[in-house]
Amino acid sequence: MVDLTSKPYYLNQEQINFLKQTLKEMTTEAKIGQLFFVVGQDEDQVDLAAFAAKYQPGGIMYRPDKAAKIKREVTSLQTHSAIPMFVAANLESGGNGLVAEGTWLGTPMEMAATNDANAAYQLGNVAGYEARQVGANMSFAPIVDIDNNFRNPIMNVRTFGSDKNRVLKMSQAQAKGLTANQIIPVIKHFPGDGVDERDQHLLASVNSLTADDWMESYGQIYHQLIEDGIPTIMIAHIMQPAWERRLEPGINDTQLRPASSSKLLIDGLLRNVLKFNGLTITDATPMIGYNAALAREELLPATINAGIDMILFNKNIDEDYEIIRQAVANGTISAERLDEAVTRILATKLAQGIMATDGQLLTPAPKELDLKLTEHAEIAKQVAKKAVTLVKDRDHLLPITPKKYPRIRLYVLGDSDDGGFKEGGHVTDLFKAQLEQAGFEVTLYNRQKLDFHEVFEEGVQDLKAKFDLALYVANVETASNQTTTRLDWIHLMAADAPWFMKSIPTIFVSTANPYHLFDIPNVSTFINAYTGNQATIEATVRKLTGQESFEGISPVDPFCGHFETHL
Image (cartoon, rainbow, N blue to C red; front, top):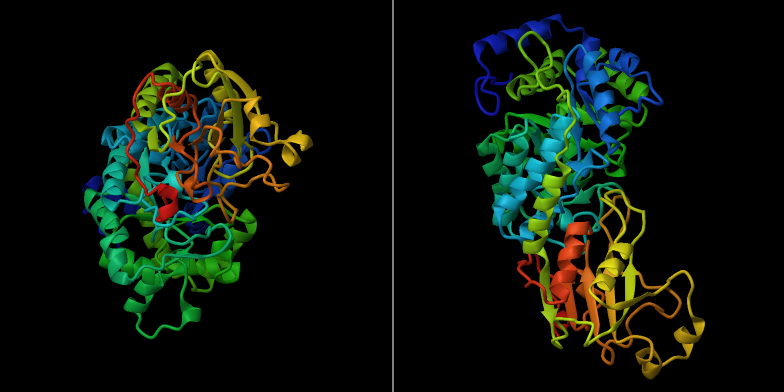
């Protein structure tokens, strides 16, 4: 059974006695409810009191909505829950991961580009404070993945970069910022994203490192954070074949499993090798990477039996509950294993101050809602000032001034509403307004209304008569359920691509992906801004126009290991 007196719980005898008595009095139905971490429920569509009473979930995870509404919903659910719930959100880049009007402080990679751990602390602190205002108590962050593959479509700026030491330092700082606000940090995505170039939403991706290389990189990060006392780890639908083979020599390839259903990776690697005694939660189980492993009626019990304590989300909540009920009833999931999982869930709630020894919620939302948005906006400005990174300026185009380049044509790529991790809005209007405020005449290239004469017939001199400098801004954000995150030019003649860049000054700014030089290697000037929020756009324009210097240090190789991107 679980050692409740040691890391990460350190429960006292009163807490242990309460936990044991609570477990003894719980029905099997109530125990099964604790295993589920359900999707956030909308008060406009669901009777929240009835939902809490029927399903008795151990946790609930919300997507962003208005602060007052989220607070009201969370309060209602906690009021009607027999055992206080975990209330989580993806607080990866700021409070806007839960609160629609909350602060988009910046991506983890922007924090890393400051080379200052305090930026990562503020990421946790700001997000944690705003989340606490509406009753949250858990963050599905920090992300402790290593950005090893520039082709990966879902990670890049969501990580702290490709250096394991920086990733560790930054994630430790972010976790401290969250904890300071009574928000439980959940590190993710074990056993580690960023190696494969595919997305676990669409298939079970593969961390293909050797067992030794894994231990020297991802393993070191997890080992140190476990030593630090991290209470919770999210388990991904990612395979780590080398460790499964080390733990079970001769295992057949068909028996290899993503971590979310692998007893070898959870009870073996995570629990026995890395000595993690805390709470494990799957990543979202509607993902294809999860469901492709086994039939769902086999997979859910296999997940619990692998050593994972909580199941995130459902395909059909009633069907999923019934699968677990049947597995408990027929002994597929033993009573001992069920009690072990529920023990970890309750122990975490006690240890992290969510629940008191009388069973009451200790962390309700504050009575008065105060998000401190003005104060947090200033922090975002400080971060942006230190983060924006000049990657190259081959032809010394910088700084740009209205005297040198009075007319700018602005090309914006990828500024859409598509994508599962889109953070906070479009960049087009912000860049245009900032440039015009700086004194430039700005014309926006309209991708929807092509000038076919220009596409097929105009040459360099024709374009020089229209503009003096081309400024490209790529807001191509990482997103779930896509296979690539690349520049996608207009398919007709690549009409918006800078074929003229050797003749007309051309600058490229990326606000969402540090690797676009792979697709536009010959551009003279390339800048990584990492985040498309207002603070970062304003900082980028100040730096473009020479009002302040570039301070950012790239957390990854923006040249993608290719010689031609340096030229």
